[in-house]
Image (cartoon, rainbow, N blue to C red; front, side):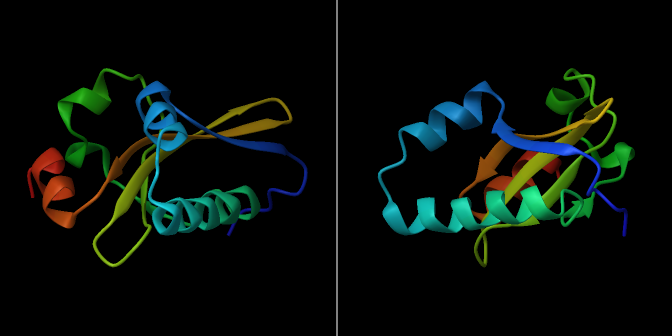
Length: 109
């Protein structure tokens, strides 16, 4: 596990996720997402690293150096990337998947 104590960590969403999150009315889901996002502030690499060969074409276009996924609920997932520049570390949430079936469809599993 990497030591992130020297970084100024921010967690934010890529435009599509940010719009989804901002307009989310499901309070229980928003609370779960908040908990996951707060956990990522403490430990950005808490999710599972996704092998580059498994990245969907849509993600390859984003010029990512890494891709992680983590569970939000039993079937729900988010994908995110970590970007480091100097003392700054940004966790950028790319996408939320309401069901595991949506996740499987995106990643062609």
